[in-house]
Image 1 (cartoon, helix red, strand yellow):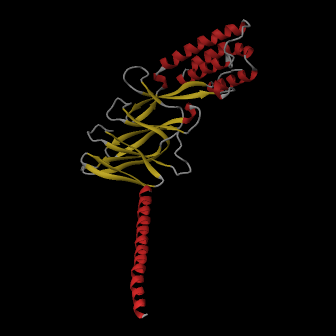
Image 2: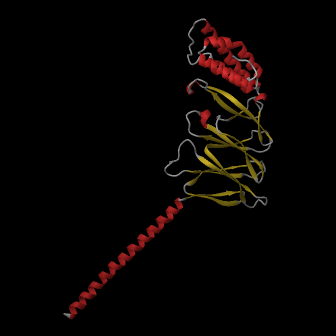
Length: 326
């Protein structure tokens, strides 16, 4: 009997030991798996990029939910060294990366005076930004940073804006202008190789949005790292538009006074008169605006509804406060 028990004990032990060893081994693999998953999870919470430029290397890292959108390299001050521009966005999972904008922060790194390492020279919030470009709009040394924005509205003029930055020296960049609206754009208005910033606006008056009058509200020139309002230097831009709309206005006026129905029934005469008004006003030509109003106010009072006439008269009263308009 004792011999049989001894044999059973000998046979049982290896099985028990094997079960214990398997259990221990399984537990170790589980812990290792958890540890690896935790490590992966921590890595997912960091958005980082290694950057190399001019023989220098450094890392840019952001904690979740901020993540890197894009990294650009551009020589902003024409010194032969490219600055590093990092664009990032802060969006948690509930916001799901809205399609109408891509980034909301800009950081710029430049070589220090010894040129042996990069230092941060700008960190700024640029909400609802969609795109970045680098352009020389001054005709002088260096490039400006132009960042387009979009707040997500249906109308570009009311929802699109722009941040404009300029590099003052090797150690600083400053915001020189922010347009919240106006769908700013860069144009060579005189076709002379010099670039201007053109900002638009809309006149609604008594009309719905679909009939709004679009016009150039402001024209800016770049000088000494400043944007200078320069509408008065571009009379030809406004004269061209005033000429086109005036011809249309008088064509419609003839049809109305002859009892003919205009093809365009969207506020005829009122809309054209308003477009003439805003272009004279933006041009800064108060004399031209006064002359047109004095010539046409009686005709307009007969040919358009009272609320439309009152609205035009209110515009004139504010633009030309010293005149007798009624």
